[in-house]
View 1 (cartoon, rainbow, N blue to C red):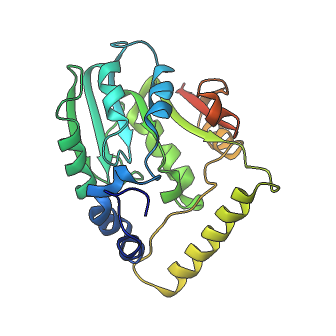
View 2: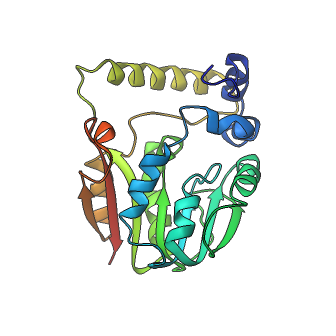
Length: 240
């Protein structure tokens, strides 16, 4: 649908009728040819907000997918970059795609749930890109708690989000319609496929993070203008 090497409409339907884990296992080889992958210029500009190359010891990318963010993270880190994802298929694709990633930090891939991260105070930086739609709103406090737990004191959580778009924009209503259709799908079809738009937006994200003791900084001019004009921004939340 999106690219000659991308998935067909029928393949996307098959994915959407699967569980999240199985759906992304199916999509993994073609994921990077879809618009669901965070663009490289967004990833590069975002990771640059964490500091110059080599300034971070260890980083964790939550819901890493095919490892797109791990490429700039490897250049940022001196020791270790870990990617965690529910889908083993996506992790296998990440391992293949990052074989030539510049940098010397060790790369690790872990299959796991973003809400049940198995580390405690191990990372200076945690990132997540394009994954919040897979976290139900009622589970967002658990996500914040999991991020807090794996960060070292003074560690930072870096991500991209934005304000809720204007209701005058067609995209707002398209997102709302998609969310409504997904709720109907999950009500009548098992297993559920959790994927919603307009999630973990400001100010809710800020409120959840500050309630857990993070100091939140919103950088509205960090991204290229073509993204910033839609209200997208980089958030750096520091664990106190």
